[in-house]
Amino acid sequence: MKKNPFRHFIGSKWILYDTDKLIKALWTSCFQDDRYSIQQPITEKISWKILVDEWYFQIKDEYADSAICNLVGSIFLKISNFSYAEKYFDMSLRIAKLSHNKQAEQISLNNLGIVYKNLCDYKRAITYHQQALNIIKEVGEKQSEGITYNNIGTIYRSVGDYPNAIKYYKQALNIAKELGDKQSEGTRYANIGSAYSCLCEYQKAIKYHKSALKIAEEIGDKEGEGNRLSNL
Image (cartoon, rainbow, N blue to C red; front, side, top):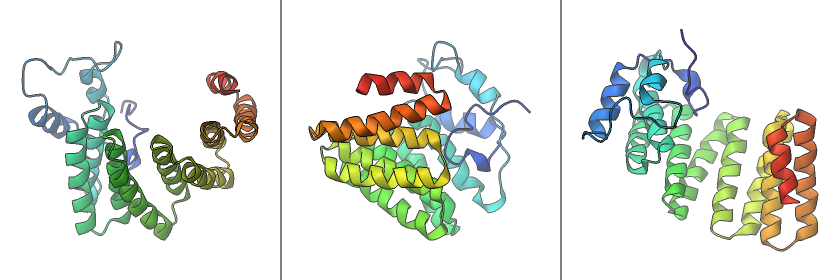
């Protein structure tokens, strides 16, 4: 089996799926004219054909439909087709609720939050992320909890509510520390530093950016190190 190019998508750990149905769903629902073909590149180096040929799924029992919808929605999100991403994530949410699948439900809610953030509907985005957070705390998924706190913090930063952004970023940071996730820890230090910069609290901003830089140096993240230096 070939390497799964979508392994980083939320929910991809559930599924390795035969791509025929995915292709049909994608191109019949969205790309209905001659401007797009299966060979149309997403980037200069990668085409849809190559990506889909490498993507194999194996569905798990009654949660299959929800998982399919989530991953198809993730593809539309990746190519910034937010209306179709919303459609599939909403379908996934309804299926997850009917099947009482809490994990799929919180993933769908978080994905909808990301969609609405991209649509600049920040109030609705926060509502979905908060609903996801309630479920995540119930089932005890710490990594997802940290990601969701970080997502909410980013939305508050987008609307200029920097105190709330810092509040959620710090909660995300604490979870990264608890899990020993250095990469996320560094990113969240940098996020807090950026929020303090927006508040003109530069000494605090420098403190957090230096912490982010230290972690980038520890883990050998040269790109991250460069980004952190540019913030100082």
